[in-house]
Amino acid sequence: MNKIRLTLAVAAALLTLLTFALPQRVHVERRAFIDAPADALYALAISNAGYQEFNPYKSADPELEIRLFGPSSGVGSGFRFDGADGNGTQTIARVEANRAVEFAIEMDDYGPATQTLAFESRDGGTEVTWTMDKDMGQNPIARVFGLFMDSMIGKHFNKGLENLTSVTAA
Image 1 (cartoon, rainbow, N blue to C red):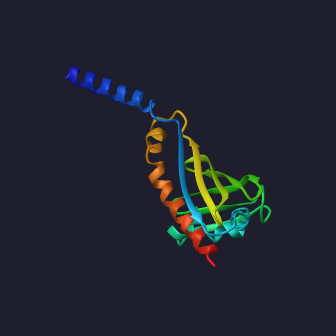
Image 2: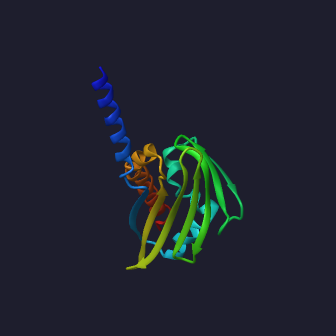
Image 3: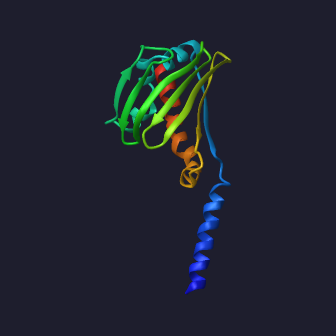
């Protein structure tokens, strides 16, 4: 009986130690070419109301509650959200005129993350890159959770890029 307990204790300790070998930082990225000028896409992304036109979480959760705050656009503008996937805030933290908008995401249950929408003019349209970067910290459970972030978040980015394409279609 003691051998079994010792074996289980050693296995649990090794499993815990192995989780620290998992990546601490997670990066999710999706791209799409959109037949619209970069400045038009940027104008939507930098605006509280404009972002809601392509917000992928609204498509996934019809009961999602959105409450805008701050200026109508630019650094400091943002919204609070409360829905099936969680609640928190999204605030514009940094902008690069007609090239990129960086959002600070604070989710009550998941902690902070950074999302960026980058726009590069190309061939009569725009290459849009949507990224998220998150530090999973030292928590072994969070690091395991990080292994699934690409599939969990990536589907929302894909939907957001589809929505952005639809909103800007002539």
